[in-house]
Image 1 (cartoon, rainbow, N blue to C red):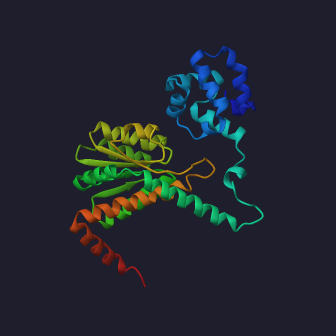
Image 2 (tube, rainbow, N blue to C red):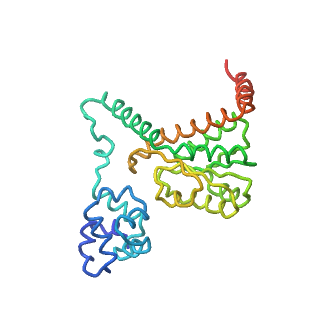
Image 3 (cartoon, rainbow, N blue to C red):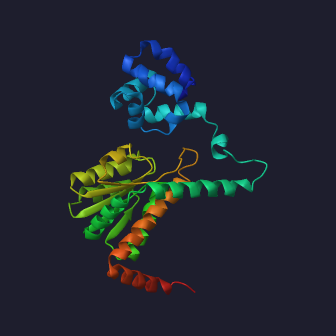
Length: 283
């Protein structure tokens, strides 16, 4: 039985079951009660770390609440504590629509600035080194991150690199199962908790492929398995659908694209060739 379907307030449900929780589970309850809004943006690993318990304890806590799992717990908390309009239009005057693009611009600029400051130059160099040596480069993403994967695939194709962007989870799994230590697999997931992408990278890693990730969450399931992590910075909520951090991920793609091009003259020649090939497609 899910708490949401029973119509029970999730925090009230925590209070009801608190007395029968184990000591470790009470640590999770205490943290959620004190940090309700912050919990919505966390991975199970982050909540476990902040609560000072194991991920298994968080799972048991969800079971004690009779919710469908950790994601369902977050959904219940979000429904209780968030007004989607408040989240979407924070710091925007609804009587002044002109404030909307200004607010979005400011958020994007802040995200790009923070990502630039925190992006690990050595991680970028390592990623480019592995990409240049790879026999094949697979780029995986689904949903909104699928569009980012396609953008990266397009740029790598302009460079003449042996790359393919894959947005279908079944095909991702098939490619991943046939990877080798000569291949590089790049996974894109803002939350780092996208099951299809994580599963595909885990499978590719078992086949000895080098795995790179672009994510907003290094403590996520994706972050934990990466050989190289390229991190974005930007607030993300379910309602905003990674609106801001998407631009940071695109910037990282552009950083890789330019860094790769500067490494080899032949890649710059490939840009000229591919630009010429598509120039005939314009009036």
